[in-house]
Image 1 (cartoon, rainbow, N blue to C red):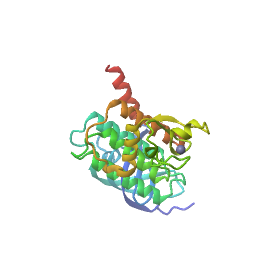
Image 2: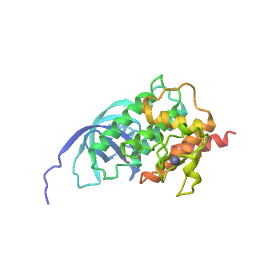
Image 3: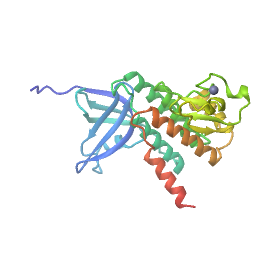
Image 4: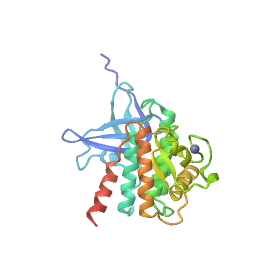
Length: 272
Ligand SMILES: [Zn+2]
């Protein structure tokens, strides 16, 4: 057995999720720019005076040093500093909820090739960075729409963005045929025009009205820079959320509705 000390590496990282571990420690899931997804244990971080504690708060961008043994599931967090705290200032409940949901999603939907797929992890790191930048800026008029854009970017980075310009079956644009109702099918990979849906071939998914189609097309062309004319109507928001939820569920292994969003839904229902 080797008694040589394990090498320590340093990286910028987003703190995605954390769990308590034992009596006093915390396990944190990090998305690093250099090493992809890394899980670290922060020994004693639940102690009030732990210097590791500020490094394991979800939503923070940190620069950390940790032991690096690629064969191990868990690395040891050694030290570091906080570069940015997305939850400082006075975030709204909605903003906080979508932030935590996005981090949970980034953690669950790891690249399919495994945690060592550094290229995709690096791209997801950049998507998180952009999402948090826009979310915490004054320009963010609608956190829900921004979150949908984040979901879209995540699908894109996994090579699975929905097709919304053309019908995936016949290749025509529904706008050319002046159709008012189209369909959105996760198993077909996106838009299905009314004509193809009525041929009854395969699954046609769920109906998609013109307003929802226009919104999905904006998501596909704008990315996280999506302009907000006005906050989305609640019904449209529910439709888009549902379509993307089913699409992610079909295409990204590990996906489930982020628990933060379940909380928001419960909050809305109980406040009625
Ligand atoms: Zn068609």
